[in-house]
Image (cartoon, rainbow, N blue to C red; front, side):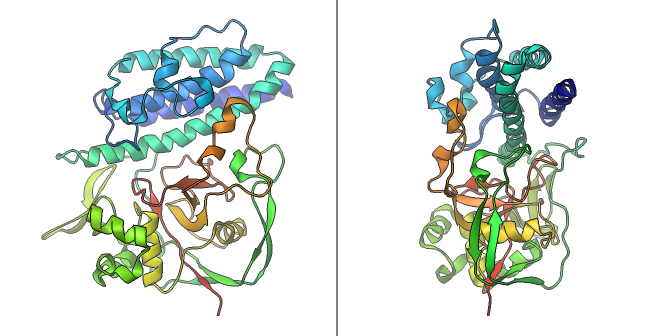
Length: 405
């Protein structure tokens, strides 16, 4: 039984690590080195950082005699772990032309070989301590796989040639959200009552921010069956949505003015083509039946106000999703009206990975559901994503809710 678990984990390590390389495969070395903004990271950095995580969190503490590939990489590829030492500044990751693309690939091979060998030979006590960290590392790498796609999309959108990341989708990688059912918005009525949200205790993986499972009292409300579509959002724009301050939160209206927002990120209007959007397949006509995405929280909240609705709380969203009442989840991350706060009784992980989630529980909003860029099987109803309210470069959209009555 233990041997089967180790074999399964080895296969999973190989599959997850290979998917990162598959995402990078359509990109040249030049593409992989550039950083388009401080919030994004170069593809090469993502590939190195996810290797650093396994090396630093799993191999160095648990593999006797492990040989660090290059001691300098601890400074270059640490992201935000204060307990693990100083770091290269995040806004300057695009300056790391060295190590080269080939050297980062060699780093990954070194870590992969050591990690796969470790899974085979670790004794029972070491395995018990390290196996949860390996799983955390795999989930962490899957998060970075989504970031690789969103970051390179932003990067290529700034190139005057508007190049495509890929003309066709690499195997198992979606390049844009799938179409959703169009037509009038249908609503799901929810009675008031107590619901349970959060990940249950048990062997299934969940991040620490999904626990503990707890009870929440929900008032009666309605939640939209599907996300808001591009066609829906065009009506908001045509009705002066970006010119009407009464629809916007104060900080949102300030962002509209200072950033000159007139449409979602990556949208552009040209005659006679009409609205176009830059995507991972390059510039293409806007698809009306896709969920609208690349919205900030401010834009999502303004649309909801215009529609005579509001954004759902994360408890409303999760309880409906867990019961299978929502369609088209997993196409775009859906902004909620919930601040990213700890659940009652929250306990961070121990050791260095205590910094994984809890330290960011301030000034952020929760998104739910996953997106087309999220690796399949990675998200679940209790999954809590989070970003500051002005973030637009993720595949972020919205679903409406209303109070009952």
